[in-house]
Each structure stands twice: as structure tokens, then as C-alpha cells.
Image 1: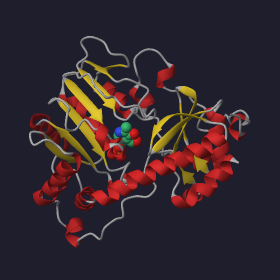
Image 2 (image 1 turned 90 degrees about the vertical axis):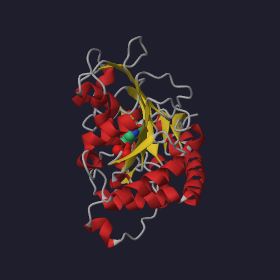
Image 3 (image 1 turned 135 degrees about the horizontal axis):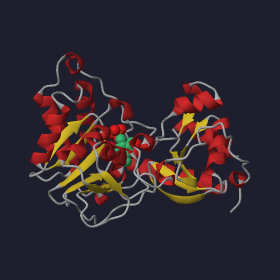
Image 4 (image 1 turned 90 degrees about the horizontal axis):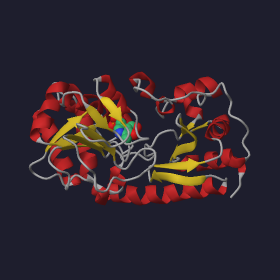
Length: 343
Ligand SMILES: Cc1ncc(COP(=O)(O)O)c(C=O)c1O
């Protein structure tokens, strides 16, 4: 199918798309070069103008209709978070995700915090991180002296699987494990039946995030599920009170609210289909994704990003692919803006 996205001209070479990334190069991975992210709206504003309020930011996979924030008791702000608040969150997490009784749970300030610390759980060796994927895992392992392999090989001491993967949306249904295995399920709450929480073997660590499905990226809350030993070691690394009182309070309520989660899954699925209709109608091809973000192939992703950015719609492209462009879902009042930018 052809459409407006086939007709875009060359990318604006002054724009943020004009860069290469770690997967374009061979040789050891440079951890600082690995940190290429969505959500960098400030850079878009510097190049294409406007203020934050003028932009529709689709560069992340954050649910645009977040969990409604409850009123917080004053003590959530004023007291140090007590063990009761931590236990309440962990109990709610155990019920929501069906965490088996022998597995421990640690509340963390976002999955990112766990990603940064997990490589220190074992002596550096070789870690298998099938890619392309969310690049903070490789950056964290490389920073601590691990050799990062994108292919499986004998003797790898660790393996990281992003499930479903960001940006492809692919699931790892029968994951091969290594002595230290991490399954990053930050986007898995859109498909709870696919989660490995109830079936993962003992040594596996599973990461969860409140920044995606619940749309509360600024709350900085995540959860790690694993053996009591490894959870204890991670907890020691993070120190006391790693998660704020407000985050514990909001997270506990959100996890107890299964009707909200069910309704949200249905809405995200419908909105993802709506975005696909819009994008394929404009000439893009669906290349993957989850109900929280969609991955499209276009002839020139940088040119499409520039075209959208001129309408103040921000997207995510990838240094390793000239064709992929990823879009999060528009908020209910932003669909017309996106349709207008694609027209
Ligand atoms: C696959 C994946 N894991 C983890 C994170 C970080 O999540 P959090 O906001 O909970 O730190 C992201 C953020 O984009 C991600 O894409």
C-alpha cells in the first residue's frame, strides 16, 4: 500500500535521527553509546520548537490513560515508609501476578533500578542479551565488566530476555535459562497469561514496572521477583527505603484494582488496532509491537519522524534500523493531531 509516509523526503540531517548507534558497530559495546531512549522530548523541542504542552509524545510505551491517582494520607509523605506499607505492596503484587510462595518480592524505584544492579549479583562473565532490545540491560552489564553477546553461546553465565520485547513485541515462550537469568516483563501486563512468573525456574529474576501498563512512569515503581537469596542481595544493594511512601500507597491500590486492569487491557487493544489502521492507511507496514506501543516499517523512518515532528508529534526511531518507527498510543484527545500529521 502507498500513502503519505512513502512520499516523505530525506530526513532533516540536523534532527535527532542523524546518529549511529551501538549495533551499527562491531567490537566491544560502549556502555555510554548504548543509552539511546524514547521520551527525549527536550531534544525534539530544541530541534523542532514548541513547548512540552504543544507536543504529542508517542516516543514511549507508556499508557496515556494512567491509573487514577488516589488521595494520599499525609503520613505517606511525612513518615519513612514502614514495613507494613512495603508488605502491603508485596502482598498485592503476589496476588496480582500469582507469585508462588517460595519466591520473594522486592519493591524497587522502577525496573531501571533493578536493571542497573542485577549484573552485580554474579562475577562478570558473558551475558546473552538477544537483540535488538531495550538497551539499558546491555549498558548495565557492560558497565560492570560483562561481555555482552547478542547470540547464544556455550558458557554464558547470564541471560536477559525482554518479554515481550521492546521494540519488536516478540515473546520468549520457552526461555532457555543461564545461572543468572533475568526476564524483563515490564510490558507483560497487557498479556498476563504469557507471564513467566508462575513457571520460571528458581534462579530466574522477573522484573515488573508501573511505568508502562499503569502509565505511572514518574512514580518510579517496579518490582523484582526471585529467590529469597537474590532478592536479599538486591535489597542490600539498594539500601533502606528505596521506594517512597506515595509510590507504595499508589502501587498497592493499583495492584488491588483488577477491574481497572481488565478494562485497560481491552482499551489498549482497541486503541492499538486503531493506530494500526491509521498508520497502515498512510502507507506503513506493521512490524511488531504490543498493545502499549506499535512498531512500523516505512521506507525512511528518519524522514517520517521528521514529518511527524513538524506537527509536534514525537516518535521513536532506532539507530540500528533505517526503517523502524515506534509509536506509543495517543491519549483520547490526541488522535486528531496524529491523524492530521499523517494526512
Ligand atoms: C523493556 C523495559 N524495561 C524496563 C524499562 C524501565 O522501566 P521503569 O520505568 O520501571 O524503570 C523500560 C523503559 O522504557 C523498558 O522499555
